[in-house]
Image 1 (cartoon, rainbow, N blue to C red):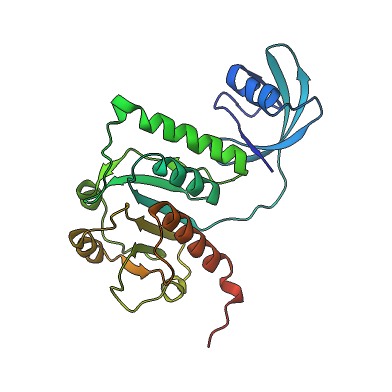
Image 2 (cartoon, rainbow, N blue to C red):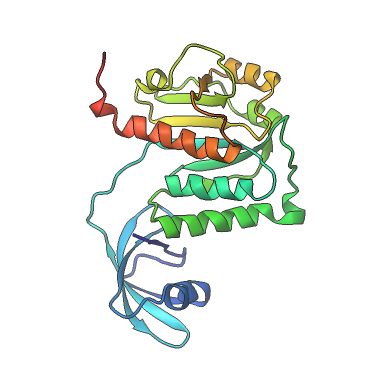
Length: 252
């Protein structure tokens, strides 16, 4: 089911009138009619049942009720995605948002081909637009946030080693660097997972050393060689599935 992101002007009233872009999206793009019911979410993560009660030439009015439904709570995943070239980064951000990642932090790493000038190219604005579109299209109830891009050195300076109880740091690598397994690392049922995915050229030896010093664990995917955009979605899906199905594990 699609999800509508309720604008910040909403103050908890039983009705809400929409104009301009939000009106255009619901009435002109989705072609919703009076009586149509759908879910909405505000910026605080609260879920509401919405119903279109009136449509005019330039506005529509919604009935707003707090939703009594129970919804699946996904494990919190924070994606540190090393910047990829071209449209690949857009694809990764869209798919990560659809998958329910809590936060996306673009990272300019040693082997990143693309360099970011957010003021010149407006990439951050475009990425935020992609996040919004992906949330509404997929119906994700996770308030995915994308942060300003950082360099790998700044990232490592501002983040302390993974040490808090319930936190786990993982990074995917193209080589076997240790003997740990994804199931083994996730068996502690962490409430928050930090996931680092490299660019097209992978992570440098310097970066892997610093990640190890930060208490991150290395994961080797025992499959074919994956593109960077494939590895991100593959990794997110693997982590989510293992955590969500942990009660069904069979311990040998």
